[in-house]
Image 1 (tube, rainbow, N blue to C red):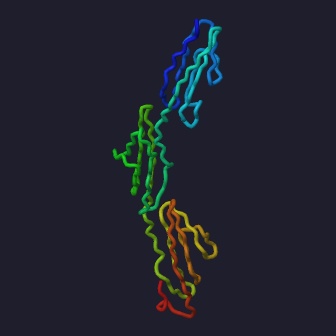
Image 2 (tube, helix red, strand yellow):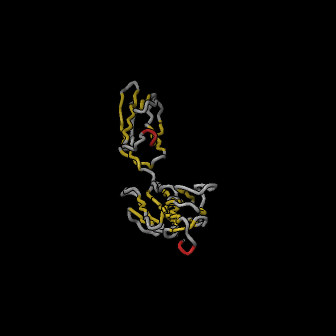
Image 3 (cartoon, rainbow, N blue to C red):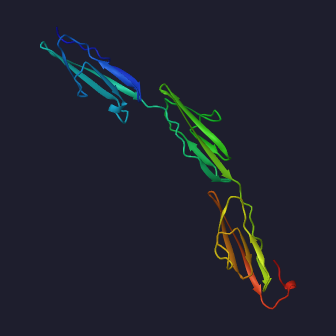
Length: 231
């Protein structure tokens, strides 16, 4: 008897799923699929179409009577993707905007139940995003931490007499420091300087992604008494 084939004309499967295609088996038939397989049944999936383009699969069945060919078109539905950036640190008053893909067949929800394309974050928050379609649900989250404004002031410029000292205090919690110059015996990374020499002292204070620059100019007055000095 002649071989028979009865593939569906079209099928749709999810990314990562497997579809088994079976050719009707006539007596003493041989098979050749467009994938190169020669069995009566093959497995197909998105590994055959890495870009998830529609895939055409054909099979030819042959025996001593004749050969026939049948074809099926297979479409792929991508898995939902809720990928968000890594956790981040921001300076106060620097909002960030998160955005998801714009796929009409995927339903998106942010942590406040909104469904907008973009989500604004302007305070320390744990934000999550869920994405769902007929193939499943994906979820991701991001912790956005805002650092408080650094309230550090070295003070106004000062005049000192020889032998007197000005304390320049740039301390701020969990911060690092970089001075342009320091007195002998001190480090440019110290938070506090004990200054007896004239100069323009500039410090960069870094706290996470945030930085603040402060400066104070010290003038040395020779041959003075303490009533002429201010600091």
